[in-house]
Amino acid sequence: MALEDGIEELRRSAEHRDGFDIVPWKLCRKIALREGVAPGVVERAALEKGLVPSRYERSLGTLGIAGQARLLASRAAVVGCGGLGGLVVELLARAGVGQLVLIDGDTFSDNNLNRQILCTEADLGKAKALVAAERTKAVNGAVEVSPFPGFLDADNAASLLDGCGVAVDCLDNHRSRRILFDACARLGIPAVHGAIAGFWGQVGTVLPGDRTLLDFWGDQAPDKGVEVTTGNPPFTPALVSSLEAAEAVKVLLGMEEILRHRLLWFDLRIQEAQTLPLN
Image 1: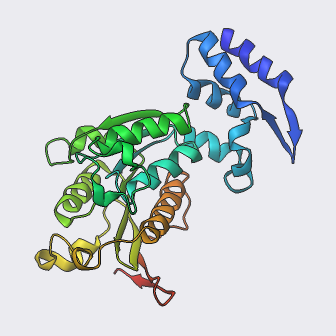
Image 2 (image 1 turned 90 degrees about the vertical axis):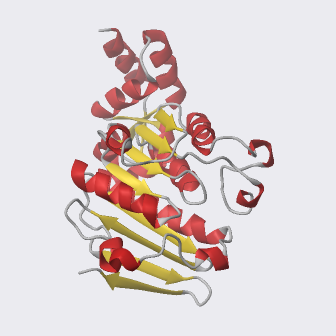
Image 3 (image 1 turned 120 degrees about the vertical axis):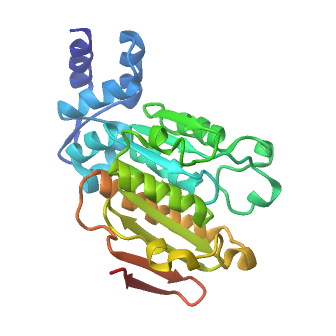
């Protein structure tokens, strides 16, 4: 009953803008604190009543109220919180994905400063997963964060990924990718793949039962690719991370227009992109 009173308080505060009833997100937090519930509980309850927390107002034209509510009720895993994963975490938190599992056993080092959005000079030596969790809380306190400062392996994959609606591959080696793809196939979880090397990048989405790029390569795939020679500048991971986040959101919302059975590949040096069929 108390939460219903809070929703009524939100309704009285609503401003009708562009066809939506917008309520102050800070008031949502105030009600959550008063009622002793998680902030996401209040935001989801508000959306179910057609009341939109103001922080999501600019997403409504694309996602809609039902889509935003669905995201807040979703759980996603980001595997790797470095060059790709750091920005994926940021974007999914801003989008309002309600639960994020952040997996990375690495710590920040000097050579991460050129491209890893979560890496600052003050964060060198800190665990990437824990820094990502703190950033998530700072960006969107309604998101429940479960950081795991360890590497994904065959023994922990099932428990870490359990309940996720999507897993985002932000890894830098094929050995770990095989573990992730195998676990997702067993658990019935879609996986969004991304990889970078110099000016090059690629993105694709794998649904349970689909063949992956690693399946086509078989045992011939090296553990790492040409990135060991090219390195990675700051702009390539930013683009791939954005594409991965978009794919993850579309998967969580049940959209059909995803990069399934396809690999979006691009070369930023010559500004060329291709969609390569995987069948």
